[in-house]
Amino acid sequence: MTKTGFFALLSIFVYSRASGQLTDSLSGYEVAKQMFEQSDQIQSLTYTITKQERIEGQLTKQISFTKMQKNPYKVYLRQSFPNDGMEVLYAENENNDKALINPNGFPWLNLKLNPRDGIMRNDQHHTIFQSGFDHVISILEYLCEKYENEIDEMVDYKGVVDQKGRRAYAISFSNPYFEIVNYTMEEQESIEDVAAKYKLSAYMILEQNPKIKDYEDVENGQVIKIPNDYSPKLNLIIDAEQFIPLKMEVWDNQGLYEQYEYAEVVINPEFDSMEFREDFAGYGF
Image: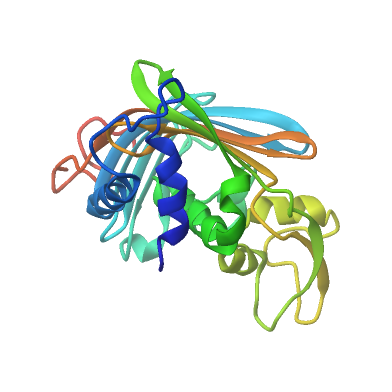
């Protein structure tokens, strides 16, 4: 995948609003290469995420501590709000590819669920497979490549900001081409498949089609409404040292659609061999 669009985007980051000079000795292209090299080198993460998502017209809030490993894919999260102590553990190709859930409440026993099924998707914009930064970066890559010729007009550099003690760059991506369009479902295609193909929000597609009950409730030839892009406006705060997203706001014509804020990020921590097993010390499964 070409990174041309991102090189243009990041060349905006490295200029100081006050002086108009490069803030580092690196050129925009070199900064872009450094960011992609560093991103490619991220194999594991720990972080605390505060997320707000619009569910049935109301913003919901969750705060969770997350551990994740890319290959093989493994993720553990422990929620501190609103359900303090709720845990999710998933390890690729283990436990019949099911996620283990400690609800820390009724029904007072651990559950093994398909991470993509309705129970785990209820009141959530994303699946556990979209943890970390890769999903966010893939959306931005797609948009920058799609609108490569218009990117200069669509990206607005807001300057250097302080994000909870971290020096960061603030930018806004405004998309005047965003619209809702008709889409004809193909054979054996789900809402999730459409979202993955065009880098869209699957939950936003459901919002646009209130008669569709879930992500599988579609058939070949059915015409549905989908957004042509992820959103009309994205606000991003990107760490100036590590070049990782610290905050992402997604807006649509109804207002704030979703917001993700990352804190206490540790890149490439070394995990214990037992860390993604249910009997690891400190887990409540």
